[in-house]
Length: 228
Image: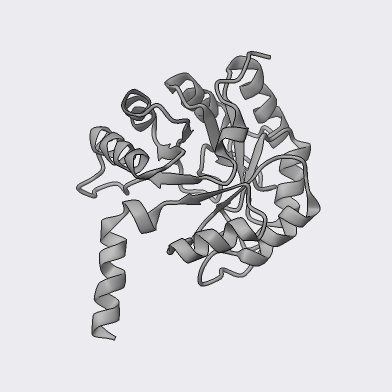
């Protein structure tokens, strides 16, 4: 197995910022994403998470912190780096960590999660982050060889009710089980206080996206508060 690009211990207790824009939005440009990622690093982000091959490439050139790369593709339930081809493309684009759907749902290419992770490890020096939706997903992802597990999909797969903020109970449950790999808390973390809570509940690191890097959503929160 090739040597890995990063030491995960450097991310312990740290903030990771997810920088993504939806198709058709003004910020949906790899150069813009890279600039926002660089700005997040200035603010203290220890790593960044970006979507799309060009975004990974531009961001790798713009920052010196680890880049978590993923590729959203398809209209099915599994669309976060859904196949081995997508995963290897992210690794080849320069992602230090490849994030992929880490649930137990069937993958579009017919490969199981363990086969996909094993191939990424064999063909690249990237680590693999499994985006999970439940405790059972997390256990299965670790068994499949994931280097990192995240709560990214909690509330989006039907396995758990979608919470208003981060799924702190799931974070606590996974952390208490001590599955042997780092747990990244991700999903609906909107305030510094919620980020702190996630860390206090046992998360290894905290990933925040929309609340930092998606101005349309944040503007909407303020607008809704003023018009309620």
